[in-house]
Image 1: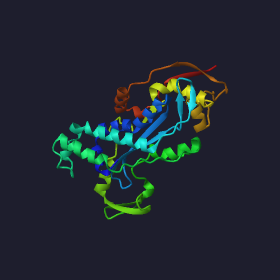
Image 2: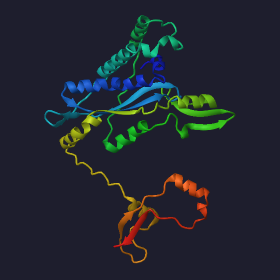
Image 3: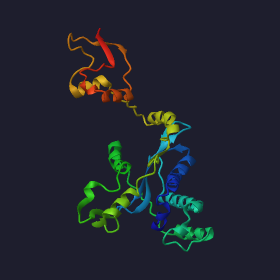
Image 4: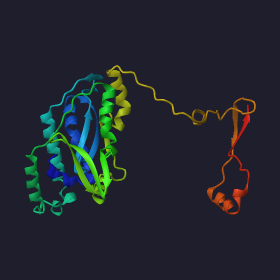
Length: 303
């Protein structure tokens, strides 16, 4: 979206929550008109390369979808101009209906907006500006998709490799300028660096990655098996979580269920509840550290 709209989303997590629906509306609307259910997941970034406020969403969509009626996989392509137009309409409509939550007269640079009529006029002007919707190339295979998308799912605002040096109360980091295609350096004070960094920490319980289409939780249980069947894919079985004995044997090299005397397997005989923490603390005050034995919580015996 145009840079003049970025401040409206700054630290406004309810508005950023609605931005996910704006980003996926174009793909979902077009695919469902064709009778196809696609798979989408999005990652929200609120920062730019200079650690500034730059809210944008990375959307990954399948190059095709499931024909729910016939159970077939059909190819699907999206037109950039159509997606850009729906995205622009969705964001402007969202901001237009969120005047009470934003109150633009309080933000620097747009103090001239005093009422909702001026707010609508301002958004109409922003609607005609340049909006950038970038369509990346199709990834080749699952491994390339994982490597490409992994950078966006758990990416911090600034990586440690971009931090050059710290001296004299200033932090220097380099970044790639998309406009010039050259690497530049930026020097920030300690307070400004920390302030910019923590401004991108999401609110509690806010999910930065969302799913849509047949990947959403309420649909994936029923639609994903149909997707695997339509693509003639074999579903990989989930690896079983290792138990206590396997972990201990792999870490210490000893089997906890093997008797150290006769070598036979131990059979569980019973369990005894442990001592409450308050009692342990009270006993410690009365010289528990002088005791040379403790009661074990499990009783084992040879089979």
